[in-house]
Amino acid sequence: MSDPFQFSRAKIDDHAEKVGVDIRPVIEFKLDRDKLYKFGRELVDEYPNLFENLVQSPTDFRITKKFIFPGKGEAEISTLCFTQRGQVFTFPRRIAALEEELEFGRIDDVIIGCLKKFRASFPEKKIIRVGLVNEYIFDTADLDSARIICERFTRLPVPVGGEIRLRINQRTDDFNRIIELEAVKKLEQIPEVPGHVQAAGHGVKVKMDFNNVDMSEDLNDGDILRILHEGRSYNESGLFAFLNANTGGEQ
Image (cartoon, rainbow, N blue to C red; front, side):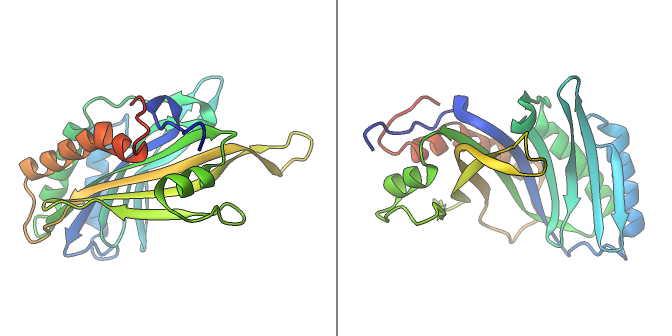
């Protein structure tokens, strides 16, 4: 490309940070109903800035939080949900639709505090994997994001329709460093035609999943903090070095 695109923090249009926790034995929503409710109430009481409303059914358990931005709107996020594998914490960092950035302070302390409460409610369960997942959308404006991905990371021609998705694991002895890239389009409402949208630009969706390889042991607080610390360090430097290949670029 004659004018290589530079991935940088200034071009992040949307950003969500997640912490996924794999648990064994797995959660059973029916059998663990009362314990889940007690655990959820404790989180709501302890961290009201992150957890607000419990949603529980025989097949689901999650906690949502409504973030209100005066004059701009609101967004209700599932800040904690349980899957068959375990729990996923979600922290919205930048919400593109509302052009808002959010700060939550020392998230690692919150995670450790939540997991201590979880262990107290479920002493029989082990935490075998923790993953720091960052999901970004980088705004490429008028540049074709499918072309950026194809020309920088493959030798493929740009596919018809511009659909492409890559998955790469830069694994080390201790950590999986899984990067997924996907070409996306920014959509906006058509004022004259309610309910219809049109393309308003291009973007590259990047999902960075940093997690531990060894799942044979019950992770302690020190193990979890190391994973989160190493994951953040990689997101600050290694990820941008990978995305910008040999083109440099401000982080």
